[in-house]
Length: 278
Image 1 (tube, helix red, strand yellow):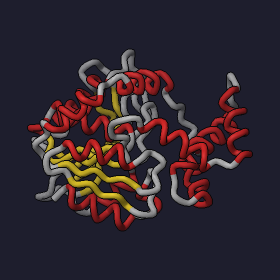
Image 2 (cartoon, one colour):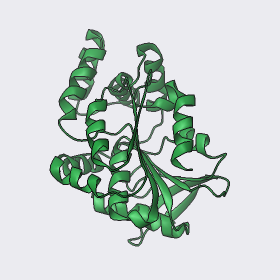
Image 3 (tube, one colour):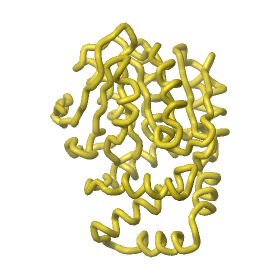
Image 4 (cartoon, helix red, strand yellow):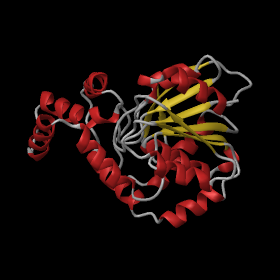
C-alpha cells in the first residue's frame, strides 16, 4: 500500500499487484460513490497476467478528504495516477459507479485507454425504477421493515450501521442465502461512507442527458467490454442500450451472477477479464 499525492495535495491510498508483462496494465475503479476499494478479488484474477492498480477514490476509505467531489476531478485523479505509474496506456475497469467513472475516463483520455471494462454498471435510461422495484421484491417483509426503521434513525450505532448496509446490499446477489453472507461480510469494515461524495456525484450523473451520453459512446474508438450479471437488480437492458451505441463493443451477460459476479461466477468473470487485457 502506498499513498500518492494529487496536484491539490489530496493523497490517495493505492495498491499495486501483479507482474509486468506484454499485456496492458489495469486500473480498477471501485463503486459507491463514497465507498472504499473492495476489488482485491478482481485484482487477484488479473494479477497473474499483468500489473494491476487499485485505489480508494478521494474522500473514501484511507484516502484524504477533499473540498470538492465532481466527475471531472475523479477523472483527473485517474489520469494523474496513470502518469505517476508511468503507463502510456492502460485498461480501465470500473465496477458499478466505477463503471461510469471508467467510461468518463475513456471519453476524456482515449489515447491513454487501451480498453474499457464496464462491469455491473447502470447504462442509460430509467434504470432506477426497475432497480428499486426489484430490490423491494427481493427483501422479505421483515427485512423491509427493519431497513425502513434503520434508515429513519438520525444516528446509528456501529452494529446498526453494519446491519443497515447489509440490508441495502443483500439484494445485489443472485441467491438470497449466500447473498446475505456476502452483504454481511461487505458491511463489516468500520469505514464511513462519504455521504457528501455520494450525494454530489450521484446528483451529477443523474442530471446527464441520455442523448449526450450516447453521443459520447458513439465516438469511442477503442475496445469496450460491457459485463453484467443476469441476476443484478440493475437491468441489463439499460447497459445493453449503452453498449449498442459503442462501435464494436462486446456485451457479456453472466448467468447466475448478481452485482458482484466475482462472488457467484468467478470462473466466468475471470475468462472475460483476461480478454479485456489481451
